[in-house]
Length: 306
Image (tube, rainbow, N blue to C red; front, side, top):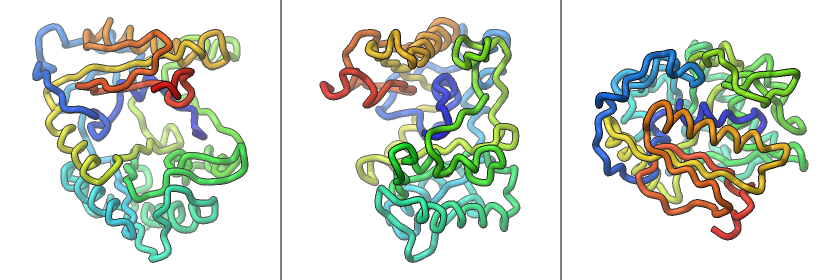
């Protein structure tokens, strides 16, 4: 990814379309006594005033990207927009008959068929400053091809469009970094510790990039099922699953393992919500009732053994 990912943000500030990968069987209300916390308890997470499912699920700053040449994209995107009350003006339909539908495109195709039309729709609909989040779907490319150090996730490249600060990083070699999140910058070490300053609610104007997330699955029915599962999850909670990679300890990337420890401390220790924190060399799979998930994926030492 071109913009450094924020693990803690991903764990505690996700929108409902990413909440569930399995049905949640527990039905405990988030209003249950003992789960109300003041803002001082939540000083290092993305929403200092805390969460409640009836107040924080606001989609007024969310746009949906649909590739009209992909029936999968149309079905999933329109279903999501209908379920979340997203109006047509915030549905970005790619209507060029030459728009690619494959998983991999090149830089020129990204610019011509995706980035430029999205920029134009945002401008023509006077949505500049109104959109913080963009949802992509199955049927929209996954990756933008390039040289060894210039390949990138489609969603990561899309996040940087129309950004005075980050647009130069699109199609460029290597990655770029941003300052949004709980990391401190002690003696020039960006990831040495966590800042005590509360993380502000995300705003694209302030941060210079969009948060782009994808609603997809192995097939359309799986993706559509995620919408239903998210609907059913309101007022309930599942388990936060954290999977540490022991091969990353004592390496330059150990700070991500440190972030997993911090996430467990915050979600389970401070908030009192259930977590499953795997700290051995096994790559964790087949877990039910998952509401949040963070792992190393293919960078885990036991990825091939899963």
